[in-house]
Amino acid sequence: MKTLRKIAFGLLVALILLFCLFPFYYAVLTSFETGTAIFTPSYLPDSFSLANYTQVLGRGFFPRNVLNSILVASVTVVLSLGLGVSAAFALARIRFRGRKLLLLTILSVSMFPQIAVLSGLFEIVRGLGLYNTLGSLVMSYMIFTLPFTVWVLTTFMRDLPVEIEEAAIVDGASPRHIVLKVFLPLMWPALVTTGLLAFIQAWNEFLFALTFVSSNDTRTAPVAIALISGTSAQETPWGAIMAASVIVTAPLIVLVLIFQRRIVAGFTSGGVKG
Amino acid sequence: MAQLTLRNIRKSFGRSEVIRGVDLDIAKGEFVVFVGPSGCGKSTLLRLIAGLEEITEGELGFDGTVVNDLPPKERGVAMVFQSYALYPHMSVFDNMAFGLKLAGAGRGAVEERVREAARLLELEPLLDRRPRQLSGGQRQRVAIGRAIVRDPRVFLFDEPLSNLDASLRGQMRVEIARLHERMADTTMVYVTHDQVEAMTLADRIVVLRDGQVEQVGAPMDLYLRPATRFVAEFIGMPAMNVLPAERTADGKVRLQGGAAVDLAAPSGAGTFSLGIRPEDLRLAGEGEAAFLEGSVVLVERLGEAQLVHIEAGIAIPLVVKLPRSVRVERGDRLRVAADAAAFHLFEESGRAVGLRQEAA
Image (cartoon, rainbow over all chains, first blue to last red; front, top):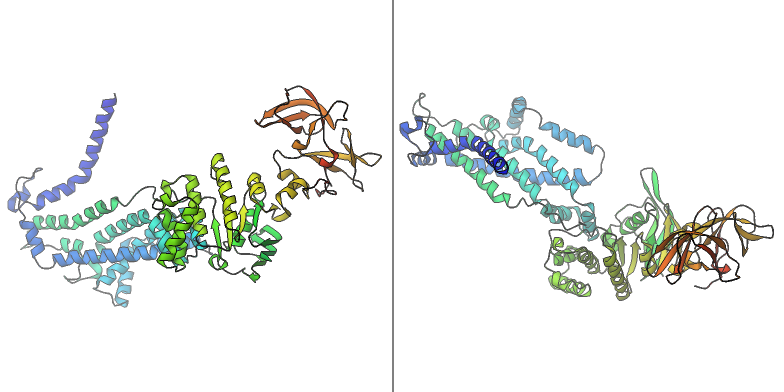
């Protein structure tokens, strides 16, 4: 009975893994194939060639596009966390009228579908003179990264013991010191989690990136991939597209692997009783 | 000269007034303990002194200057919290050094002060540890160390021992008493609900009730001469027996439904109460007039003594503290007596009538 349950559990895990990883596995597999091999379905690697990678990385703007993506996503994350932490401090620790209303308003911002705000946002981007710049993307991405950053950080900060803050006040710390030297180190897990989510959202965003920038050297990677075309309209260069997709996915996996060590549970234990 | 002066201090949270006009002078170097039941406002009063809460009305003076609007660091206070409130991400050394560094002390000075405090509190081997690697007692010592290094004018303790287990609490109590001796110039204000801590540590105890001062005095004064029935019942363990009494025809005191006591009743009519501490009661000798007579309903053996509850036909069972050598069993009939000087009389309002003759 016990072994049966273990086997069933193992099978279930395997099924979930297969479901999650198969698309990516197939993309990796395809990216190493060339010519007609791409069009014969095979589930095990039978040929290996880096031709697709050299083609994608060697040709024109793709490396630049990846760099743009890194830049846009990083700046978005840094700005979101910076604004998020200071907003969270105010919303979690300072009592003022309309605090709840403000929190709900912030949340409601993220409820509009992207397509609904697209045209209005386009006008704003144009009005600010940000059209076809990476700034337009950073600005528009913060529309969806900020609300959840502020929410998660506010919830987290509210749970930090008040006594620690009061001890810091008695020690002579200003609000800036409290946030930077006491709260930030304690908020690492929350910062890493929200930062990572914000990064992934900004990294994968397609619609705004397609709309607000239009030239090859300001484009971000997802749009660039979609625009990879073959020599004729009849040919879709699957190999190159798959290679580009793998290149774009890799940084996310690396980031998650690096930061998962920092998401340490119970980091705040020991400061107050218990 | 009084270092800390509280003048008609009031504090309201919204509509409810928590501190209702407190006047108090605390001298430099004095160890003052605020006690009272939970909700009496003792912690709030401490937080007002610390500057963590805003004073609604009244004047708080430090060395003659009004500090109502000064932030904690400019008042020169240090505080030890019930829950320790250490910075979890910092080592013991950094926890203690945090305030000094913020104040802009040089590296050498910080090092020296922290080492000195660590030596005082026997924390030297632990300086590199994180708070979560320490026991409760060690954490509280770090919290005290953090307060010491800043060399405060006023040292505030908010129920610092409440989270520790009983044996550790006794040990830390002694350490705090020693600390006070060594820092003779530092004023200490200590909040607790534990009257043993209050009695043993304080130079003066402030008993608070519903946001007002009920009585201020040296521990033994409060014990021997409680000004009100509330203080009488609050100070002393086990609590004082307070029994309804009345006036006899010849102006003596008589328990309601009980014996007369050789004690002049207060002038003026009305009911009043008679108080007697369990430890002031003894078994009546042969031929001696008994204060009360009744049968034992419960014996609590504490080890060094025993608490005997006697049902004597009055409203509440009488508690008598007897030496352990006396053999008492449930159901025994006992006659108890006490010196007339050991009695306390309280008016209906709760105020004590006259004062006991016994010297402190």
